[in-house]
Length: 353
Image (cartoon, rainbow, N blue to C red; front, side, top):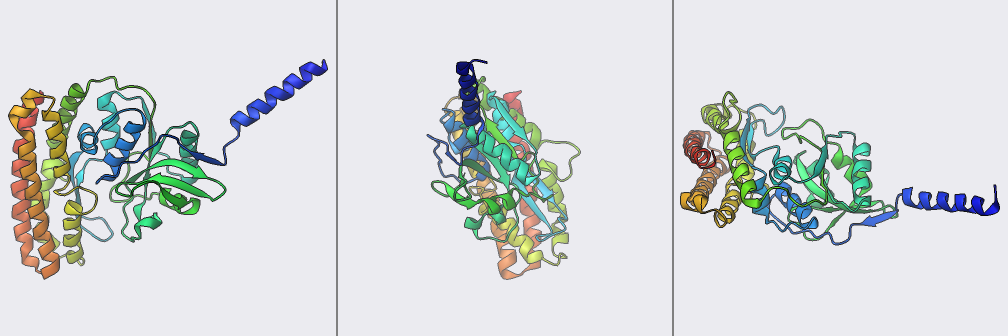
C-alpha cells in the first residue's frame, strides 16, 4: 500500500468517526415554542411550526379529532372514579388527516426511549414524548398523569440536562437526565399513552386543509357515536349519569368530585372539557367552509362548553360543601349533556357524510 493511500484511509476513518460520534450538546436551531392550554395540541403546534406549518393550537386539536369522553369507574387508585374529555389518538390522527410523513413508537424502556429521542434531535427533528407529569420537577405536583406530552428540543451532556417545550411554560424547560428518565418511565396508568414518542419529517402535507378539516370532523363524530362501548363517548356519558349514585359510596368521594371539576376546567383542557378549544377550531374551520358556517357548529359547541363548565361547578360544590346529595344534580347535568352532544354529532355526521 502506498503512503498516500494509507493517509486517505485514515482520513476516511476520521471523517466517519466525526459523523457517527454523538454530539455532547445539541439544541435544534430555529425551534420555537408557543405556549398553549393543552399539552398534546401545544406540542403538535410546535412540531408543525418547525416544519413550516403555521397552525393554531385550536386547529391542531381539531385536526386531531381531539374531542372525546372516557369514564373510568374503578381506577384502583385515587381518585377512584374519574373521566376525561379527549381522545387517546389526537397526535396520530392529526398527522393522518393532514397526510404528514411521521413516525411513532411505543418504546416503554426509558433508556431506549431516551436514545431514540436523542437520535431525532441529532437529526434536527424535535420529538414529542409522553411522560409522567409528576416526575417533572418544574410542576411541583404529586398527582400522577402518565399521558402528559412534551417536546424534546435539545440536550447538554456536560450539564446532564435536556431541554423540553411544555404547554404553558415559555421558552424551554431544563431538566436533569435522571429526572427525565424517571418521567419517561410510564407505568400502566389511567390515561395510558398509545405511543411514547412521535416525530414529523420535513414533508409538506398531502391533504388540503379544508379536506383535512372535513375528515377530522367526520372521524370525531364517528368516535363520539360508538356503539357497544359503555364507558366511551356518548354511551360513556350515559353510564356516568347512571353511576353517579355510587360515587357517594366511594371512600374518596370528595376527591373524586374535586378531580372531576379539575379535569373539566383546570387540567390543561382550556375549559369546558376541551369544548372551548374545539369551538375555537370550529370557528377557524367555518371561515374556510361555507357549509360549516351555515350550520353554526361553533356557536353550538360554545354553548356545550358553557354547559360542561356548569356541570363542573356542581362537582366543585360537592367537594366544597361536602354534600353527597348533589351527585343527583351532577347526574342530571351529564345526562343532559349526553343528549345534546348526541344531537350535535349527528348533525356533524350529516354534514360530512
